[in-house]
Image (tube, one colour):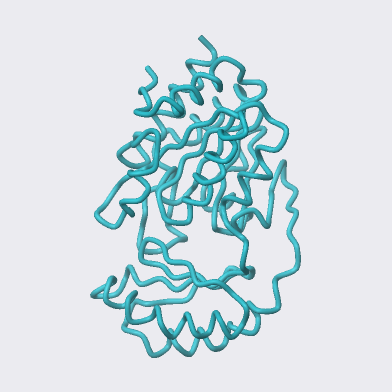
Length: 269
């Protein structure tokens, strides 16, 4: 049974997806929404039942997508998403897309190349466990494995901000991560492109990087396109803003998977 969103706009959005699924777009974040948050990004496997729920939903709605800050091919590989027929995987906050084995990806911004060595030097002086993930289109510093992840995150914010400004990049914070990426590239861009020309939209996320996607759903609603937002809340480091903004709050990837499966079932009923 589908849970009931707590807002009127969310209830209308969910009802619109169920009533006219052929014109609906449903997009889901990967890390923290479909897969539990882990210390090493390469270990983030989908929650039990996630692949099956995505497959059911992809066959029920007009467009089903996984939207990630990861590279699209990375999300496909780590999640085993290539087995889901009709699934669109959007990577790097909308810069990349993967569909049916084909990747579309632009050249990296020059600022990322300019920042790479400087960020590596800062990380080299950070506490044990802090490490750099080079995503080609962006640079991500992870502090979760450090002895004091929050303190390491706070200490790195200023030097990384200086590098970001010098290289024409934005510094974005997340769940024990700091990411340097090109300005104007966020999940709002991804949702804007995904939803263009469609009749309704739903989005599921878990982190600060998902707030621009919420913004876009709300903008679409103001323009007459119904939609809903879902927050996947798990762990003390889930930003409070997600739960405050979302139409529906779920307790982590397990409940997200159950929601996606219930949505597919409601459409098929």
